[in-house]
Image (cartoon, rainbow, N blue to C red):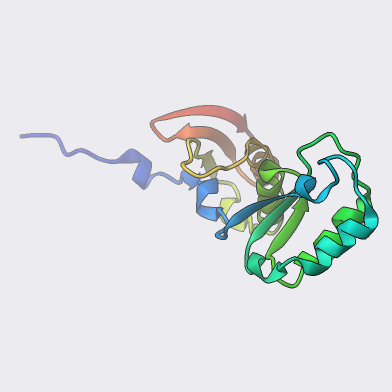
Length: 167
């Protein structure tokens, strides 16, 4: 008679936390202002303000925007502030930086507002290998958030995890 196969992972108290499950929906937009600068390097206030006034801001409805300048131009803070003010009625979120900075800011907000009570005194595995662009910083943030409540923290998959913390 064959011995019954028991899935010990499914019957354990182990909680799998997948950052990908929290990945915010929405189109990501990199708004590079280099094309709004004279020769890509000089911000001329009058010309810049004219471009801001003429721009179709509605095209950013419900998007997630990263404001950046990919040239070595020195851009005054007020320029980004002005762009942000014009984007604000339309975007879900606007940050200064590249798309990685945007993802980090999104996860920072999600993890900060996370209800950790379901992880209290439980062994937690933080799943790795996501298909979506989860920033490395999000793994650090969730580790630090779970440490005060979890019994233990591991990284990877249930079949091959790396232990990180045990109370």
